[in-house]
Image 1 (spheres, rainbow, N blue to C red):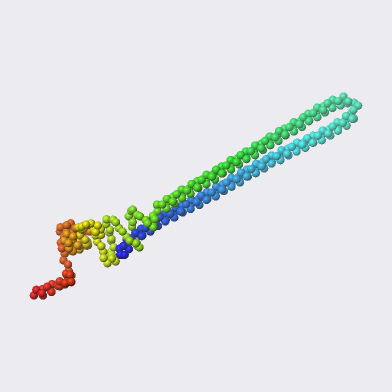
Image 2 (cartoon, rainbow, N blue to C red):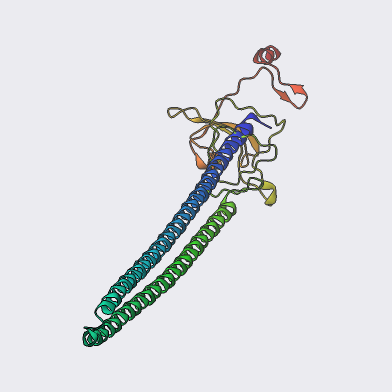
Amino acid sequence: MSNILQQIGAAVKGKVDGVQANVDAEETARIAAITAEATSRGSADTTLQSNIDSEASTARAAESANATAISSEASTARAAEAANASDIADEETRATAAEGVLTTNLASEASTARAAEAANATAISDEETARISAVSGEASTRAAADTALQSEIDAEEVRAAAAEGVLTTNLATEVSDRQTAVSAEATTRAAAVTNLDTVKANLAGAAFTGAVSGTDLTLSGNLTVTGTTTSIETVNSQVKDSIMLLNDGAASGSNNANDVGLIMERGSSEDNVALVFDEGEDKFVCYKTSATSSSTDISGDDSSATLMDIKVSDVYVGSDNLGSYTDFSTALG
């Protein structure tokens, strides 16, 4: 393979490698973004779990405080009931003592105070009735207070259970919503990765529709260029071909009218030089001409084209050497 083709192949390979590097970089960036998103989601789940644990701890603390308040209220009620019972017992003790004193006084004054005793007995009976009524009223009040307290306790337990149920439902809903969001995000990311895999270049058989540039290109297979113009701007070109085919494709026509050969550029101030096989002349011809590589008929395209001198050591016609001018002059002499 020629050095020119190696350079062209190296340039194409460089471009392909650059495109692949860009694809790899973008894929790496997308994978990093997906990993970062997964990490963020994991952190969010951890934060959510922490919030759930904190909320559960707060609920348990509130429930414990409520239980403590209920227990304290029950202790207060029992203490009040005990104090009331103590008061009743003290009152009964005082009444008993007073009754004993009264009995003693009645005994000592029995002879002189029977009428007073009857009146006193009536008063004592009324006092006792009033005391009993007061004690009964106090007991009823305490019972009503206990009933109301128990009702409040039961209502508080119901409210706490309802609040805990709502909290549990809300937490379950939040967890479900988070899981749904994470699943949707994962689906979106997977679709993006699949789309990237679909649109990225397949290096086993890539086709490029735009311009490709690069530094070096090395091909291990054939190179086919189907464009209109191939420009090679190397300083030194090396071609391994022993025989080069020009005007390829002419064999497909019944008659080829194109001149075939080489045109050499000599600069803007000089005409070009062409060494071609002129189809019109049916001979090899060396022209000085303004024609360029786009010309297919040099003498027809450039009416001012002139033939050029050729300087050689010997010229052969078939196997015969024409000899030099000296040989010609000598032969004439």
